[in-house]
Image 1 (cartoon, one colour):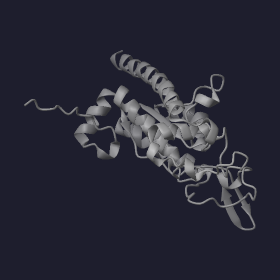
Image 2 (cartoon, one colour; image 1 turned 30 degrees about the horizontal axis):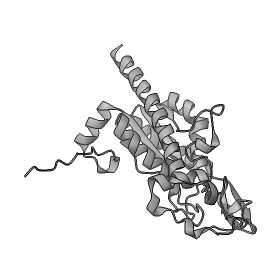
Image 3 (tube, one colour; image 1 turned 45 degrees about the vertical axis):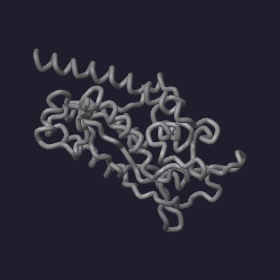
Image 4 (cartoon, helix red, strand yellow; image 1 turned 60 degrees about the horizontal axis):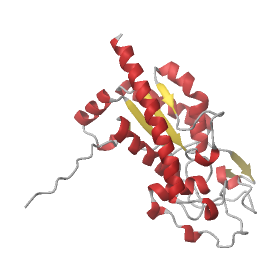
Length: 258
């Protein structure tokens, strides 16, 4: 009787690697993937960790294709904040999609001020460079990703790192097919449907299309979200990022050999 062969999948998660496994992967491709997550309301139909579940899902696929190591998510992040009658409200608490805004949305527990996030990011990047990484791809929660867009070049120069996000440049961006480019609406819901269908609960959304969706910004997921669209978004950015990262790795190897 023939014995079935099980395909071995290499470990890509930082926390699960032994030192030898870590050394092997970083030698082959010194890329760190950092999910910028939150624990934040993403509508009644998506999990509170949607920000990092999406980016982590993409990063695992990239690490399998290109190499590199996927870090644990950084769930603390910056966002808008306003104090009303002695109560602090953050991010989607202030969303105009809520009729009684501001209101504290259930489950949100992630906010830190910009200065603290900035110092945390620089400390993380410094440690990653010390560990031997040369490229860092960071993506997830919008305000956190924007921090890397604004500061990535200067931080990269300071720490001798190539810092990237998954978003295309402003002139190239196409909102419907960017990666994580709304808030719990058709874009993010579609990505979650493709990556984690068991965690998407569309039945929790109001069935009346005229009824407002609390804390959701973007196209109505009830009408425009699908796993097919989510996979399309994932495939677009897998191909883009694979090409870009391989080019960067080649440049680093040439630099080392020069």
